[in-house]
Amino acid sequence: MAEPSLFCQVNTSATGPAETAKKHVPVITVPSVIKVGQPFTVNIKVGEAPHVMENGHFIQFIDLYSGHIYISRVDFTAELNKPEATVTIVLPHEGKRLLRAFSRCNLHGIWEGKKEIDVAK
Image 1 (cartoon, rainbow, N blue to C red):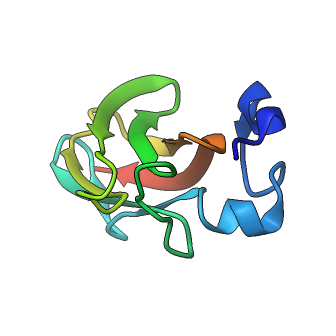
Image 2: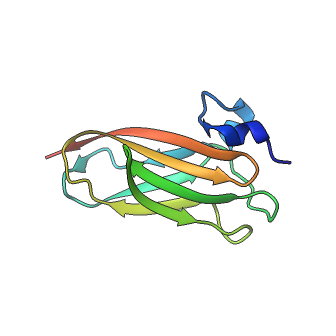
C-alpha cells in the first residue's frame, strides 16, 4: 500500500522512515580521481538493501544531476530489471561538485542520494 506522506516531499535517509530509506535512497559510487573534461563512470544502486521489483511495487526510474543540472535518466520495468544503473559522464568544470541521484518508487515516492566529488585538472 502506498504511503501518501512520502509523496509530499523528496525523501532522504534523514527524512524518511529508516527501514524504508534503506531500500530506497540511491547509493552513488564514483572513481576516487575525476579529471575535468574526461569521461568517468557513475554507478547508482537503489538502496543499501535490495528493493523488490514486482508488478505492484518497483522502482520506476533513476535521475542523475550534477548540482541542479540534469544529466541522465534510466527507466525500469517491474520484474525485468534490477534498480541499478551505470552512466558515463563528463564534467567540464573543476572544483567540488555534488552528484544527486533521485529514484522513484511507485509506492514510496521520490528518494534522493548525494555524493560530493572533486573534479581536478
